[in-house]
Amino acid sequence: MNNALSTIQQELRDKWWSKVITRRSAFFLIDGAVIVLMLLVVGISITHNMFGSLSQQPLCKMFFNSVADTLLLLSPCWIVKRKRAIALVITWLVALWSFVQILYFQTYQDVMPFASFLMVENISPTLIHSALGSITKKSIFVLLLPLLPHLYHLLWLRNDRKHKGQRRWWMFVISIITFVVMRLVITTSIYLTNKQNYHDLHEAFVSRYCHLGGRHRNYIMHNGVMAYSIYNLISGIKVSVSKEELDMARTFLKKDCPHYNDNPHATTIAKPNLIFIMVESLNAWAVNLDIDGKPVTPTLNALAADTASNIVCLNMITQVKNGRSSDGKFMYQTGLLPLTNKVVAVEFSNRNFPSLVKALKQKGYRAIEICGDEPSLWNIEHMSQAYGFDTLMHGPELKEQLMASDYMIDKVVMEKAASFLPSVNGNFIAQLFTGVMHSPYNDTWRAPTWISGSKQYSPAVRNYLEKTHYFDTQLGIFLQQLKQSGIYDKSVIVIASDHSELVDDAPNGRPSLSRNGNECVLIVINPSHGKLIDGPMGQIDVYPTVLDVMGLNGYYWKGLGHSALRNNPHSVSITLDETTGTSPLLHQQQQAWKVSDILIRADKFKF
Image (cartoon, rainbow, N blue to C red; front, side, top):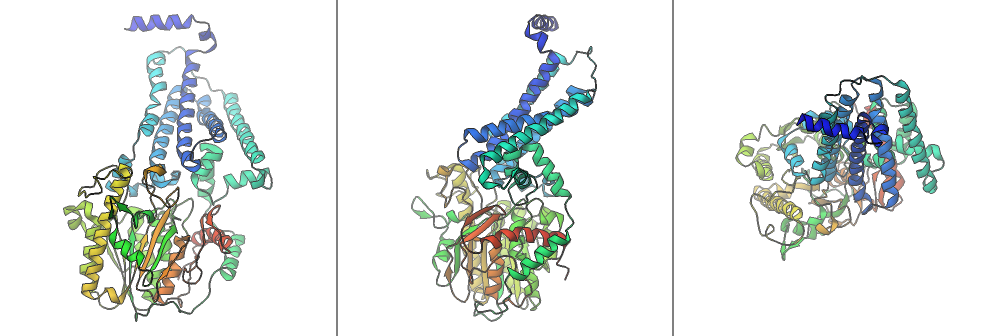
């Protein structure tokens, strides 16, 4: 075997092209090509959903971005002696990063920031199950690509001891200069192609490197992975707040935030309880949907149809960021927008925030949170305390029931609430958090119904709808139990999605209200008057709307959103530079992202 391999090597040495490309340089060419291909696959994965189909321009831009990134990634190899070993380490790290990003994007429709890789406390059976369910042929292909240079190294270069690695600082410098020049050329090309979007070339750089409004995928799409890494590093360091930023926030709060104290929209229930049900991944398109002529969500359908008695919006747009469910809870509780680069629940869980809980506790309410997740997930325990909850019933408290029926978390949470709430003395705010509808949707539901046997839509959508139907059934039982205990008529009940979920990235594989399917559900039971809100409205608008319904406008903090009972919303700022709909409030909605970021970082809520 060794003799045959030596013979082949000798024959290759005699070829003319072997004089130009040595075995060692061939290794780096193969290794570089593999990294370029991996980054290109990630780029295609995150841009396909943005454009629907890839045009030639984004593809060329991504290719040159990938080449520039590869030059910079491999540049350390010029200043170390064990060049091939370092190159292989870099390649495998890029492969793991690319693998994770492809899985992450399928669920979250964005790129996972580097800070999130350090959030080991979020590792749970649910997360692992979700990740395993997201594995595709594309992700496996990326993970296996580094085997090409690795095998080449083992078969052709492992026993090559003649060459000693040399530190070539001039090649290192040339690699960095080449990266910078390529970045300048690419960004200049973007500027010249889209002059109408920029005042000058400097703004093209600033808006892409320093702007806090866009999704993370936008940075990679326009600037590549290494520029995105630099952006993450710079934005991660920025914690302090300047005087100019504080002045800007004060001006906004004074001029553009509501200051009313009246309660014309308050429920007619005297001192009502508040039961807030946050529903995991509830898409608005699932409501009023029939499968083979039978309704998937009969309970939600009935509630949504009764606009004479309930406040209903099936066009509430997702505004969560990297914190996902924790961001949804943060917006609903505080009326603040999430951080675009970091996660509030991770970075600032030790802070005190204004909240619905604290507004009601000032009136003598007791605050209870019931959720089947572990307290460490998204720092649930610390954030619950930051919001002001008195009683926390999480994974440890519900462990016995969850072990008996781990896939029936919604049933466990609602049964616990139905049995516990009647024993509470006085008024209360209870926040329930469901979990059944969490991704993935690649497995058939353990208690399948007629939905699994249908031929409508894709298998993933049918699996999602099985979970949705299960939640809807448990919701119907829970509401009936509240009526039997007498709590229903004494309470305002809010049902809101924590965020939307794509489920199937092919629009023809699922029902949808829009291409992205990013509409959430908001239903408020027992307000003073019912109302159908056409929207679009943002998740940030829920907080002031609930204040209106509960008659809590004497509370000092009205939030950065707008009550849907006072301003029928027709626009949403999804990020600082991504909007939907039009209304006179749109500029304020965009500026609210900056103001919220300033207020959170400045810790202006020490009360």
